[in-house]
Amino acid sequence: MSSLVITIALLLGSAVVIYLACEFFVNGVEWMGHKFDVGQKATGTVLAAFGTALPESVVTFAAVVFGHTQAQKAIGIGAALGGPLVLATIAYAVVGWTLFATKQGLSDNRADRHLARDQGWFLGIFLVKLALGVIAFAWKPWLGLAFLAAYGVYVWKETREGGAAEEPDIDPLKIAPKYETPPTFLAVLQTVMALLVIYFASRVFVAQIDALGPAVGLRPQLLALLLSPIATELPETLNAVIWIRQGKVRLALANISGAMMIQATVPTAFGLLFTPWILDRSLLIAGGVTAVAIVVLLLAFRRGRASRGLLSAMALGYGAFAALLVIFRP
Image (cartoon, rainbow, N blue to C red):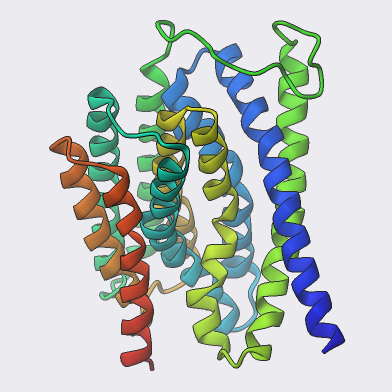
């Protein structure tokens, strides 16, 4: 019992540390976006998303490149499918719940069009990713380079939009609150240090999830597919919560859509380059649920029908995935 108490304490403690570090991260990355003049949307879709997704991509890279067994390599492939599923369902649902809690709504039609375009990009790449998981051919590994190139094009497109017309509404830099406009190196320093804290605290959080699974009777495979992706996507979700609390809904949504683009391309590229990239039934179920969720979001944003209620309901997609996983478990 004492070990279970310690596990729960570490789980809650690391979650608090991640949240506090995210406060420093979003503040620093906003100043970086302002300093480098990449625009508010690109700050969310590129700078913030890349920062929080980088540790997960490194973990995937290590699993598929240095894993000695098929089970170890499968962890990397699972992360490449589990991450987008959590972002498309749980992360958007948390945004909806936070909007309800803060009594805010979605009313920016221009932002809706941009988000619809992002969902379209993701859906096209993701469907190719799934299709490659059910066929085998000799030159498939080389397509990993195409996925990296696709992300490069996305970043180029996002940063070209710029943001000179947007007036910055940024809190003072937390490590240098006396500066009205802090030096660039301090903004970068705060962002990098916060990211390191997020990374190590996230590793502790995921380790406690792994330890908690056997204690509550979850099989390792179910644990990896059901709970671990939620843990690894916690920073992106908490970033969104913090930005919504500050009234920056566009940044919150851009952060999630940008993280989804990274998850659709970079980990997939590593999987294609260093594994056969053949998806089993559970991963195909995860991919199918993700694709359905993205179609719903795409249509809602494109038609201006997105609402906090619809975003909150995206959690049902994750519930459907859990049910299908239990029904059709290997």
